[in-house]
Image (tube, rainbow, N blue to C red):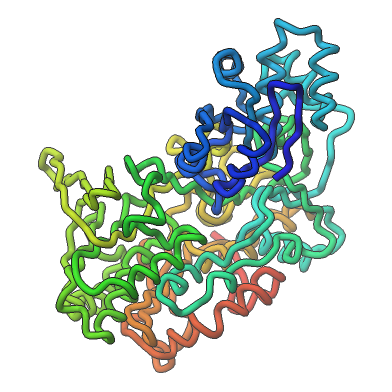
Length: 558
């Protein structure tokens, strides 16, 4: 925890954790302001977790979330009100502290001489050029001019898609000047979290430092994106720095909207409420499964789109398999609560999955969307929207509940000129090139092509984007096309997997001959692929631009 004092009344800090509140209290802070919206980072604690920890020390806490680069006059006014009423001294935090420092600066712009604002902000170590520009521009993030960083290719996002496409680009054209923009310190192998929740993988095996994975020769800009200015070929970073590009690749992933379910953030990680969609909660899933002897277990799935659409039922199958093998299943009521109307979107795989639903005695509840949860009371409320009927509410109790949160595009994407009407990056589904801006491409979970949002999809998309981007640099039209490939290894029991592989329109796209892996049936071979082969392929091949079984399909002449 790095705290920077602006003056005797206000200090700012990067993201804090609940454990930091002990030190914050000992340092004498009486109030805390959170300026970071929940859900910006994969392992970011929620405001409610901070609030609960602060309450133990009598620290007053307030939530004033600011989307990076979108500070408004009313936000500065609200910050000023808080500073006028809260017990002092106050600690404000966001991801890096920049938004909090900017809010303070703007809130003082009509009270203090600019020289005093600059002097106090400078003592806290913040970018004074950015502070001046924001004050002069009413809190907005104007484009810089003279000192812009410039790259041939800028990639927004250092996840599976971003690092893979960077490696694939350099494999084709090693002299490219490439930058990756991502604020995270840690890169996660998220497909492994289902296995963590099933007691197969250790959580630590799914994480590596970001710095160890950025391809050699690629510039890592460790910052969050505030805004896009495609008309100027510019990306504005949190703190007002501007990065210019010749070509842009957008792949920041998506946002898990934990606040989309009322009461959920208050009870995550306790009261039997868990989720394999968060690194720190997947081990809690396995603990709950082991400890459960009897009662009701709920597994939820929100409306699409979500990353890895099979993950909600994978958690159910692995849990049920453990209960079978420990002779507990007869005492446990398993309920699968699905906001959609089908078990799986590609019908060819449904018969094999239904065999396991029946084997485990799981009750399927379609059109049931989780809307609120009361952890201490162990009650969950679902909105039931049967086709052609008025929505109703259904309440049920639980002893364990695995929640898949609603998911959206990140805020800075949804408000950008790159987004379609639904908030996703608008691309041609074949070439993955933006429909409006010719020098922009997108891949991974954030773009709007109608494919499954999985790491396996990104593995196939990265070479397509790399091939087409390099072709564009060389003055040619697109040469590669994406067929919508996605893969979902459905872990139906420990030791067997239904390996669903499909493309646009539900077309089956198997990677292996049927005699080796029949994807429509549970096989041991598919399990070995998931458990033993795919993790090293991810770390050592996909992220390093080695396109094993991922060579892009060539564009067919019309």
